[in-house]
Length: 286
Ligand SMILES: [Fe+2]
Ligand SMILES: [Fe+2]
Image (tube, rainbow, N blue to C red; front, top):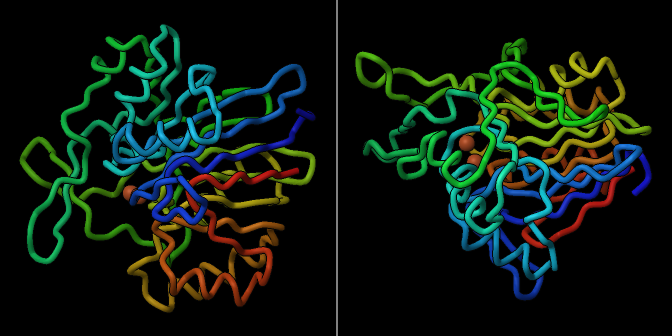
């Protein structure tokens, strides 16, 4: 792979249109990056459980035992739920697992007036270490290669991207969860930044601003992932699309929790540059 080239295999997405692939509400993608000397392989998120991510990876002929790192964008069940099974499948020592410490705090939400869990079933960093992982819990960015970094906690600067409706277990019971564990993967390529989000709970505009600052690079080449705009107000969708259009990415691969209303707005603004990838799709960039 050329230095700075990026290939993204979509392993879990809410839908699948390619024959033999499975859809599941959630996100997972294997990201390959040419680093100059080598290829860095990062598994971003793992879907709800091992079944879909492993089935789709095997259908693509991918050998997940070759991943250098697993990066968890945040602690929701549809992103971290498959982690144990993936580690068991890999079955070797020394796989790096990078996450924010808050990803392991039990999370909840009210849906139709009922309190439901938003976390995978009982998962601790020790469970991961027992399966051979080297667990790096960091609120700060983690450098995975010269041109690849996790964003760490995303600074929230826009006035229209609020985190609402999430709860976590605090010292005095349930408290509001601002999802500080939410982060993205930032890759510097010759054509500009590639930013890969899980749900972008911090706001996709905040996330891209943050990645630009972190990587000291203004050009944005592609934004890929879930943008959590499913239940967003029309005002938030409009402002999000306007801000992203101003940053001028060549490609918008919006999926998972982006929601159809927001995707239609992206289509109007970006035309053919906006796409909704599904399980089994391969995205070649730069
Ligand atoms: Fe999600
Ligand atoms: Fe989420």
